[in-house]
Image 1 (cartoon, chains in turn green, cyan):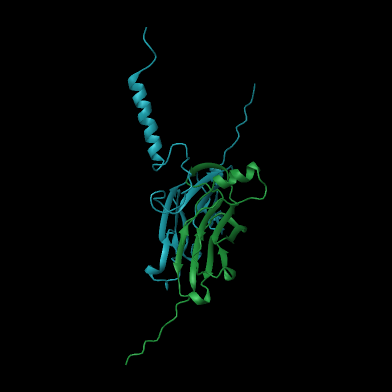
Image 2 (cartoon, chains in turn orange, red):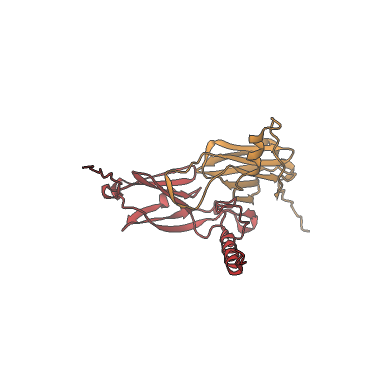
Length: 130
Length: 155
């Protein structure tokens, strides 16, 4: 799947808070692999509550967003990470059946299954040998 | 009249700025070390998992950024003021052959990290919680390490 970033349209135009959010975000690490059923996208979104995850498909673009529920504790002695909201977009290949996309979120890992449309599944062709 | 401009001091300042800039993993100096690639494996994170250690009056908190861990494999121990966390992040179902991957950015495998604690802790009362991909270890400070107020008698 090609990575393609299309600015997410918010309903309130001129809302500074919304546009500021769009420009500062973390890019989550993603694994994409293909099975005979379709594509599977696995994204690491640590620090996000299950209510904070949003997956959207619009015009063939898959948008993964996560609102970070993490806050620093106490006074820092060593600080190797800081979490902001997550955002990443991909362009879906034509053969994905957009109506049947599903997924789950567990322990900060989001798994999205993109099944292929029936006609795009590999069909084995019998070869008759004379 | 001598000017206040000193060539060598400027060079030294420039060198220090460049050092600071490149310590930032080669990213522009105006981005903080906590950048967009805070936890991608490879050049940005040479250690795994990334840790935040913080403290307040009563506890030391260690947060490890590690989504998708196999909690049964986690081993957390405190020995002589050093905390050691080891475990495994399992790779995706082993039935996926290498060539079926379109992208593989997430790391997988075993890890170990050791950290020296800034204060003495009471290991018996330690607690660990794994939520939303962040492992939080809370170590209560031992009584001797807690700050104590010393009253001053004005005579």
